[in-house]
Image 1 (tube, rainbow, N blue to C red):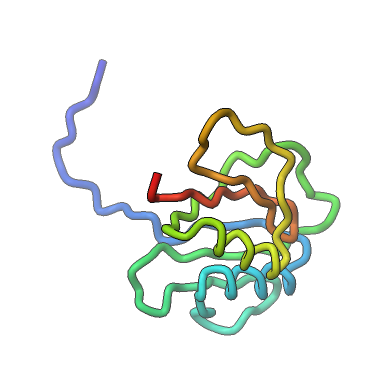
Image 2 (cartoon, rainbow, N blue to C red):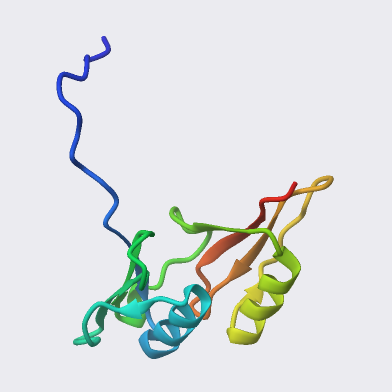
Length: 128
């Protein structure tokens, strides 16, 4: 049975949290990749990165112990939209991303990359 919404929710996505092992590398990578800035200085393996214009969702980094590293495909990832996919992929690779072994079917609009900790994310061509 479906429940009817009685009130509009005031929930919103405030931050997407990425657990990471190589905290400093991840901080450098995501700051440069998104042009985000720390909301306050990183402390104790935790930082919230924010869009300087305040228009987009925050990205938080949470340092975990290497023994907690997960294997396989991650359950949560970014789809980064761009009108210039080739240039953005080159830029992200220079920043430390790597290409993920992925088979593509036909004329896909996305390319799968891995950040420095191996987390997957897609670079989506919004012109297709």
